[in-house]
Amino acid sequence: MDAEGTRTILQRILMVASLRAQGKSADEIKQAVAAAVSRGVLQPPTRPGIDYMLSTENLVPDDNGVVGHFPPHVMFYAPYFKNADIGSEGQAAGGPAFIAGEGSPFALIIVPVGAHTGTAH
Image (cartoon, rainbow, N blue to C red; front, side):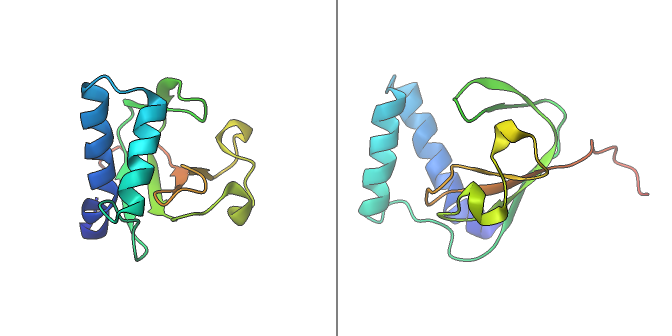
């Protein structure tokens, strides 16, 4: 995660993790994040940036919140973007890219990539 992601995206991730550890429901967490954004406690990214998960062992929630394996991928900050903005039909459609957190201040363009081998090509 770059500096902008650390300043913005990571703060949301840490808040959500803390609320989960307290036993809050998904709806309570969503409301708490929305309230934190409205108060300026959490802020969306203000410039383009990138985050990446190149592990082949990623476990992430899908559009329905079901956690499962997901291939290596890169993520680009895209606050408030929707799948239609990039011509995608969403994760379930299986296209080359989709928006996670569609329409939210912390939306990300997700682009799956081939497995990282650690060797130069």
